[in-house]
Structures are given as structure tokens and as C-alpha cells.
Length: 162
Length: 360
Length: 101
View 1: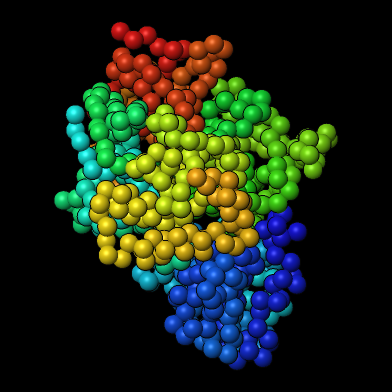
View 2: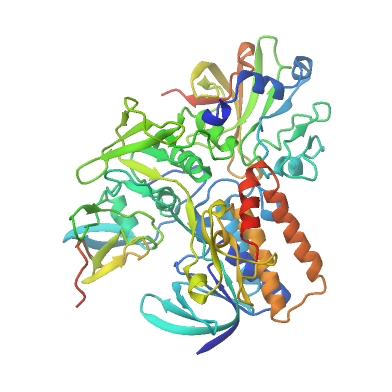
């Protein structure tokens, strides 16, 4: 299905997530890269060596959740915008996501937005916590959002309310 | 008649890298560019490139053009960049005829030539495919990313290869609605990360679909699409109508290399490289000694490989003129291994077959 | 039809220039092509084909395909997708192959 629609299946998604206890410990990168393509900036970008691709730049990146600090440097560096940061340490009922968002106008902190799944369909309400767009992100702003825990494996994007 | 040491035809990623590479070895280079802007198609690429650091991965194409042009500037005494200059003929004695500013016509004799002439967008046959509003996807990219002009309000993208999905995403960044992306193939041809970016914006990607017809009086008003079976035959009763004022055609590129054919280089139709290409050595030298090819003109690939090919062709062309750096072999091997890396994965399978088919 | 805000790009438009399209006054910016200026003004039909007189717009925007040919300052077959707009230019739709004077 994925190769026909571009929409990853639940099983594919779950496999890219670290165990729940790691998510609950603090921020960690989820690298949603499913296809062998010649690309390795995530490996180059990671200041801790937590993302490994190896000699062959076509290999699928492997993120070590015990080394990854969830710093988020890789998020704006991935040309496929396939990386997000998840953080389950803030509350028992919600989880925070940091996702790249290259559209205008940018949302503002505190704003309620519509949470979308991998097919762009509305699934929940999300609250914007922070919008980061420093020069080092090179015009790929990263938005921190808070959503209900039940949407951990489904939330992937958002749109501003009309 | 003006005589030059190395002539590079085209100032896209391959041509600029060839010029930089040859000048690094000490060659004097003239670069011909038919447009009034250098950089080829890099100047409209707003997305971050794939590849590795050596090919400026993670930089946006438009910024890579600036990086390369800055390097060209640093070689001001060795690289001359001539804009508005179209190479229109390439003759046996390595004389290239040039049309400058659409009025001046003159000859240049080169000791060595790198042909980095790029590619052109293919079209697709369906009723009314000539209506204004139906554009090449690259053309729409030029209109919106170079000139900042909206192509229209609602777009149907035909072709789910990298260009199709990337341009769709860029249309949305410019605030334009994309109703769907369709492709006759049963699978998405683009890198799937690009397709996912689009899917999560709510744009449906319809594989096994084609355009049945375009509708409109003076301009495009609607498009009728339908499903196709595994042998690409339309399935009756599956028609869907989209009211759109723009349709982008992104069904592939073909190498643009009439000049090499005219010069007498041995050409071959290689389907995996999307058209007629010159046979070439590992150093990218064609059947004509001293005449090299690089980038899409040698076969359709990504800009990252075009850059690596440009560096390799420029290095080898300069060496053929006697500019042999002490580390020639190391540099050659480095560019070749970069190309191997870019082509080694499953998505490079076609290209690898194409390379085997175009060896001299 | 102009893009005013963009997440990646900033458009630095040149000086405003006046030109005419089939006699009607139009405005464009220095540094842009005739086809871009016309498209920004909502003009998509640039000419008519020679045999069947079907409307023609641009197709490739990089000077490859000749679909955008127009009569500019009396000269036919000008590829307007690669020709820059200039102050006072007289741009006209072309019917057929054009007559070279």
C-alpha cells in the first residue's frame, strides 16, 4: 500500500518508534525513513552519533534511542522531512511532537490547530507549544505540538483552523 | 575565430561543477549558457537535496546554485561565463557555433568540450493536451519559483515521480491547491519520503490512473481522469472529473544532446537513461577524444549525480589537455565512488543497468 | 496572480515597466520574461496554432518547445518564455507561422 499512496501503515510506523518507557523518559527522534535512497544528512547532522547509516549511503538510518537526546538538530536537516521528535515525559495524558512545517503563515504558541494523520485527515485537536525557526534550521521551521497520547502513532501533521 | 582551451556547454549543476573542477586543475574554461541566468534548473529548486555532504545534501537547490557560482567567481581569471549564448552547432574540428543575444552569430574552436546540456520535459498524448493551462511541471516551477507568479488556482499533477511530487509540494507552499497527483504506473516513482510529505497534506496520490481528456474552450477548465489496468488500458466507468485551471505534466525527461549527435559521437537509445545518450568511458569521454558528457545529457538522473559527473568530466577533460594534478587518480576515484554510492541502492537499479548499456 | 509571501523564497522584483498586449496597457517588472508578466496579468493564451488555429500557451518555460511564440515589437516567433520584458514593448498574439519583414 505504502508504495501506492505514500501513506505508511500502522505496523511500519510503530516499528520506527522506540519503546514506551523511552518515550516517557524524554524527547527522542523518530526517523520515518522506510526506503533505501542515497541520502545521509541525518547521520552527518547528529552531534551525538545517534543516527547511523554507515558506508553505503543507501542504507536506512538506524537511530540508537539510548544515545539520542532528542535535541532535534536532525529534524530540519532531513531533506525528506521524515524525522520528528516525540516526548512523553511532560504528562501522563498527552505527548509532545516536534515536526517540520514549511508553510505560511506559521502558527503561534498557544494556538489550537487541527491534528492530521499520515493521509492528511483530521484526527484530533492539537495545541501549539512552540515554533522554532532559527537561521540554522534554514527555512524549515520546527513546531512543537501537544496531542492526546492515544494519537501517538497517528498524529503526523496539522493545519491551522480557518 | 575565438579559440578556447575547454568549452563547457551548459551552466547547470553538471556544467558548473565541470568548470570548477577543470579550473582547479589549471585549465582555462569558457562556459556557454543559453539563458540570461546561470545555474540551469537549480535556480528553481526550493527543496533540500538528497545525497551526501559531497553533493551539498540538505542544502536547497537554489542555494547550491549560489554556492557553485561563488566558486566560479573565485576562478574569475580561469572561468568565463557567457550568458544568453546558445550553442547551435558542433562540428568535426571541434568548432561550436554560438548564437548570442538572439542576434550575434560566431564560432568558437575548443581543444576540449564538456557537453552538459541537460534535458527537456516529455509530453503526454490525450485529447486537448495543447490547451493553455497545461504546462510542464518544470515550467510551472520556473513560473512560481523564479518569477513568483502563480500558475493558477487549482492544479492536477500528472506524474508521481520526484519532479511531480516535489512540484506539487512547492505549489502548496506557494498557496496553490493541488487536487491530486496521478500516475499510470502501479507504484509511486518518487522517493517515498517526498510522497509522504504530500500525502499528509491531504493530497491523494492516485497510482494506476491516467488523463482521459482535457476540457476547455480557450484555456483548461477541467480534466477527466480514469483508472488503467496492469497493461495501462483505461478501465471504462472509472472516470473522474476535476475542475482545474492548471494541469502539470511530469512524465519524465529526455536527455538533450543533439549537439553530441551532430558532432558524430556514437549515440545509443538506452531506455533506462530515458533516451538517446552518447556512449562514454568511465571518465565520461565520448567516442570522440576530448569530448566529454556530464549530467542529464548523459542520462536522466538526480542533480546530485549531475554534480559528481560534472566534477569528474571537468577533471578528466582538463587532464586530457595536460593539466594533470598530482592527485589525479585519487580525485577520479573519489568522484567515481561518489557516483557508485548514489547509484548503488535499489532506486539506482535502473541507472546501473543504463550505465552498463552505455559503456564505450 | 503574483505570489506575495513564500516560506522559502523572497522575490526581489525589478523596476515596474509598462508594455502593451494587443494594444492594451499592461505592467510587468524588469527581470521577468514576457510570458511571466502576461501570466501574472491573467493572460494565458499567447497565440493560435498555424493549422487548426487552436489556442497556445507556454509549455516548457525554458525556450525548448516554441509554444510561447509571439510577435514582439513587430518581430514574429519570439520565444516569450525566455525573452525579458522591457519598457514600451509591444507584445501581440501570433496567428500561425508569422511573417518576417
